[in-house]
Length: 367
Image 1: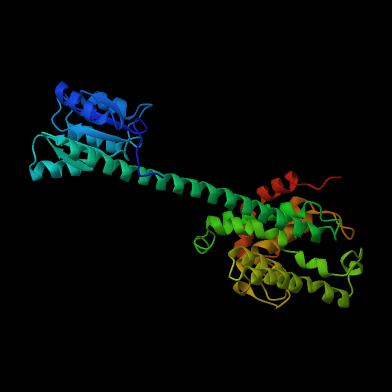
Image 2 (image 1 turned 90 degrees about the horizontal axis):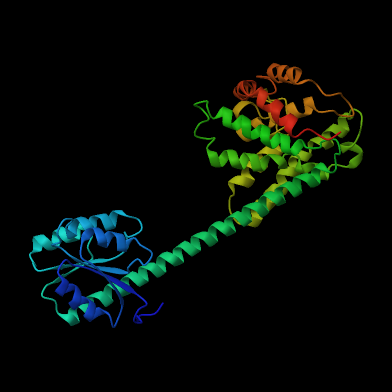
């Protein structure tokens, strides 16, 4: 940004109803700036918001019709001209008059009869201030756009990475199909409905619900560590095999915790993902795993995931069972209230059961 102003590169609007004053100001400024003139407040407002908007306005206080103070107030109330500096020209120098001008939004005062050196010095000073302000505003706007662009880019990379990681785990189990898409949408719908409950309104804000939606696909990430002969076994697992299967919750938690440590600080997103991966197999009555947590000891994120995960398992075909109908799955979730599931989450589920059915239909497995 330069401190100098080449003739014609910046524009001054002079507003005065006296022709001799307009002629004097035009002659003084034309060698330094592009000069516009107006002999009324109404014309000044038109020029100020036109295609060739001025960088600075010299405004006579005593105008016929719309006075200078009103013109200034209108300029400052219009977003297009609010940042344009206004210097009042007045034949009166009383402090009350000056205060009225500053109250209207003026940047400065010049008393008539004018002193050409003072006029040029004041105009140049305010031009420099305006140029600096414009530069900073443009810089800030550019930085904001750039930050928003990079934030969107990071979010897209994050989302794609999450889905790739989760999909990698799902490739080990060919029967799950669109399970990831369904469960993350179930979780979001449940959280939105549960937010209507006064106890959860503060906890389930928009950001948390978005993070739950993004975290849900990682709930079974730990399955990458389960041997194929157990993970893909078509029949019931032996007690020993089931103990190994249960370790997928610990492996999922540890993998996500390792990612948290790489960030060198806490992450709400990874915290929720870790909670879901580790605790979504816990049961409300304490009979689940890996820790046998009970009731509200189980993180809310995991309690939401438990209902979403079980519902999807019930309505999906597996080698060891046919799919249950939606009404039967709803009834089974309802029967698990207070034993397997948080009663409040079950109530929310029952309220939006049709949404679950629609999500399942939208993301149905092919074939």
